[in-house]
Image (tube, rainbow, N blue to C red; front, side, top):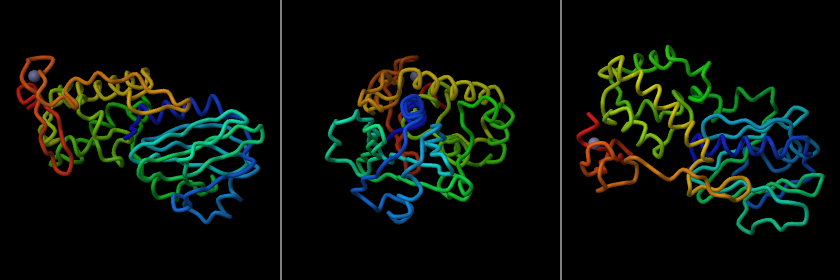
Length: 271
Ligand SMILES: [Zn+2]
């Protein structure tokens, strides 16, 4: 499932590639992934020009001037691919944009994704994106005091649940959380109120450094980017390494159940 590094990498590529391209037509194979009727989707996209692409959490935001914002969420995984003029679109696409210069952008999800468009003036009332929390790679909004307050506000909640709640911090899922908690030496079920200041500082630094590192590598090796290329991140510390030795102490990594999710931990290092 794509998380912040994959989604941000895709958004940066889309920003570099698609700025200035005008939507000439849409090709919708699966209308149920749209948020509005097909005719309305067409009205809000066709004839408009991509001017900026950003991301927050697991969502890509593309400004379509004048006046629309396109919103994409690849769900459990999938691809957003750019196609040169004349290149056939993938058969498994759910939706595609055709641009005025003959190029195209197609979307495919393994399970279910969201292909939404809203008038930019109404973006704040788009329920699925308006409640997204802090961007951990934005140093201004994800400042230390904000993070510290977040943990103080939920003292009796397990640290893993706090970090994965998209309303708190947007973009950390069950993939990157594993090594973040390991590097911060925290057990996933530790209550936030029991995480002392020194540990909080370590956790804060680790969240930023691990996500930044994965972004620099283009995200996970099993996800594809805008050009159908895999990311370079594959070397987990404990994530998905059940039974393998902990890189710090050599103890076998355990897979445990934590609420509704699985966690990979070193039982000696993470307490
Ligand atoms: Zn260990």
